[in-house]
Length: 254
Image (cartoon, rainbow, N blue to C red; front, side, top):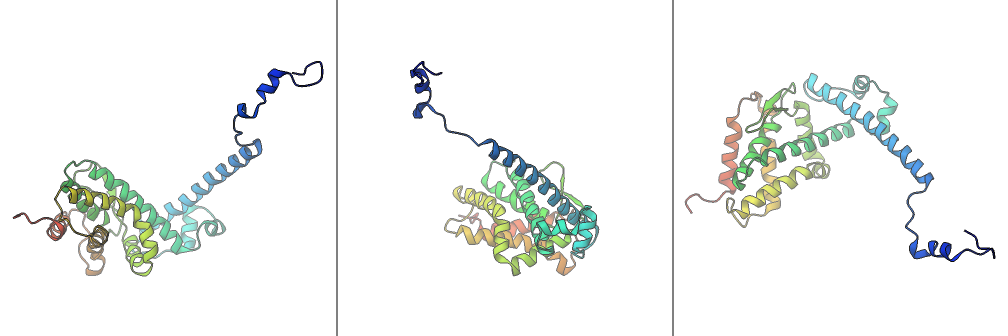
């Protein structure tokens, strides 16, 4: 490494040339801190999920949202101090739970529309499947989906009521929560428009919001009007589809 004169040998000088040195990665200290943060994040995610699971169990075991933070804490097997480390209160817990519901619903709808190639049938499948997934139930019972294998739990009655409250009292929060679902429906609606199955000239943004609200509030209205919550009432979904189609579809006579 060292020449007899005490200077670096030519070979070593070349090896240490700036242009030959690869960019440095994380230091050992940074790697150690990253491992610590990763472990803490995994633990935090597990604790949060236990709170969410406990809240959903309470939703499915009783009507409405009539449960306390203390009940969630006890069912989760964790402490009240731990709860307030992750949530500011019951509203934040419900909001997190509703976000999970919307994401799961969006993923399921993507699976449903992926089974259809025709743009109008993709739109049809979205509307009918979303209606059936939104239909509130007082016990969290599963409901079969048209054209899909297996079943998925419908929206608990208390969660349906929370969705209505969120839309009317906290519109900005609602817009953020529903953004994944809105994006999928915009994609489906745009495809139907390009195929000529939906009237051109409609403003996509407002139409997306109107149709999604029609579906949600139509299904949630059963909590107000005392309509049957039975999952086998499939004709209602098709009736709603026909109403939407005649509102935004092309005139069959043209």
